[in-house]
Length: 204
Image 1 (cartoon, rainbow, N blue to C red):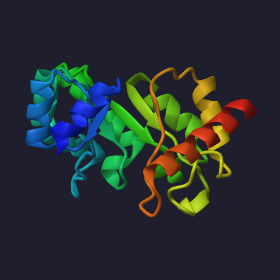
Image 2 (cartoon, rainbow, N blue to C red; image 1 turned 135 degrees about the vertical axis):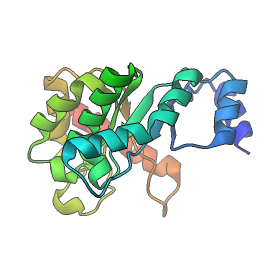
Image 3 (cartoon, rainbow, N blue to C red; image 1 turned 120 degrees about the vertical axis):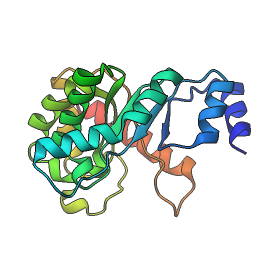
């Protein structure tokens, strides 16, 4: 059914912007239909070694996908999804290593608010470190301790300040919203996020 989904996007003029993780059949269809979505992938989390050694190990584990995305004509987004491999300082270090040591300038970072609750207090500094590499930022309502983790934009206590920081720091790249609540129709979820984003924009 995945190819049918691609046809429906084309009919309705919807850009296939990104694909999470790796799937051989999906990559074949991207080539067939001349699509070049960003590919989003979480780093591995090496358990031993110094930080520098871990960065190198994690970077080298990504090299096959670095090559494949380059051949596909897609950007590769290192995706903050928890653990060591999702921490912004490690994403930045691995991204820098891949660019400097392997010429992989198509590699960047995808930052998700819903995996960034640990960064609320120091978000400005975290954002500045990621800015040269950011490919996309996905928004979410943000309360401390991820309570709850997935929350419509504008329903939390911290996302307005975080988005204001994005604006102040000059981020002009893509912004994503989530359809990430399994208990309700995705149209409702996305609608709530769009409405919350509109309120947030007005408040800013």
